[in-house]
Length: 288
Image (cartoon, rainbow, N blue to C red; front, top):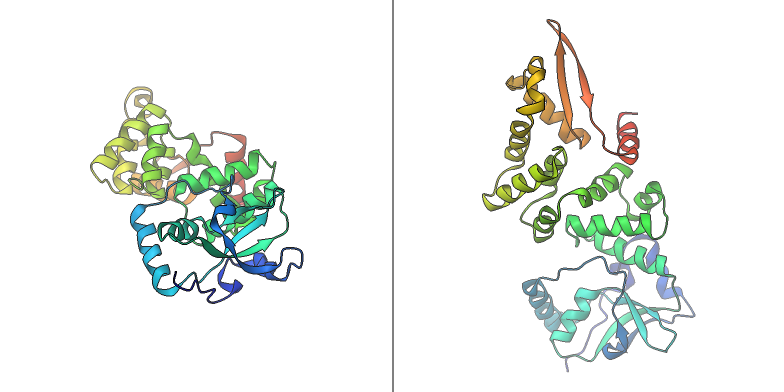
C-alpha cells in the first residue's frame, strides 16, 4: 500500500478554533487509525457526494497521500466517531486502503459534533443551499441555539442564516431542485417572494426545466401576482417598468416580497411583506 502522508499538518484541517486539537493530551493528536473502527457522524450535514468528485479526490490521494487528517472522537466502545472529513474517508475507502491519518479528540458532545461538521463544510463551501438550511435549522431547533449564536459559530451574518432557513418553507419539489443544483440560491429567494406554494412549485419546476435566469423567475412571480385579487390595485401600476425594476432591486436586497404603491402624482409608499415573527425580526435587523 502506498505511504499515506500526513502532509501539511493541522492548520490545513479546519479553520479557526479547531486548530488546537492536536494539543489535546487526552486525545493524542494525529495518528493513523483503522478505517474499520470509524463510524459515520450522525450529525453530518452533507447528504450528497458526487461520484466524480470522490473519484478525483481518490486519484489525488493516490498520488499525494492524505494531506489533511480527518477529525474523529473516541467512542465509548473503543472505536471512533467521525466528526469531519467524510469525503476523504470515502475516497480512501475507494482506494482499498485500511488506515487513514486522523486527529483524535477524547470526547465531544452531540452539539459540538454537529457544530464542527457544519463549520468545516460551510467554510469549505461543501454544502448545497438545502444542506446548509437543514444544518442551521438543526442547530436552532434541536440545540435551542439563538440565530445570533448560529451565525457567530459558522461565520455568517444573522440575515444570511435566516435566508437559508427560509428555504425549508419552499415546496418539497423545489427543495429537491435546489439540492440537485438545478436551481440556485437566487432562484430560491425569488420564489420565496411569491405567496402561493402552488405558484412557487409551478414556476420553480419550469425554471429548472428551461434554465431560467433569476430575473425570469422574478418576472414570472410578478405576472402571477397581477390577476385576481390584485386587479383592484390598478393604481399600483404593475406594468410600469421603472416600478418593477425598483421592486426587484428591493426584493433582492431584503429577501422578501416588496411592493411600490403610488398615491398622488409623485408620492407613494413601500410595502414590505413578512411571513413570520422571525422574518420580521430579520427585516428589522436589516433596516436598522
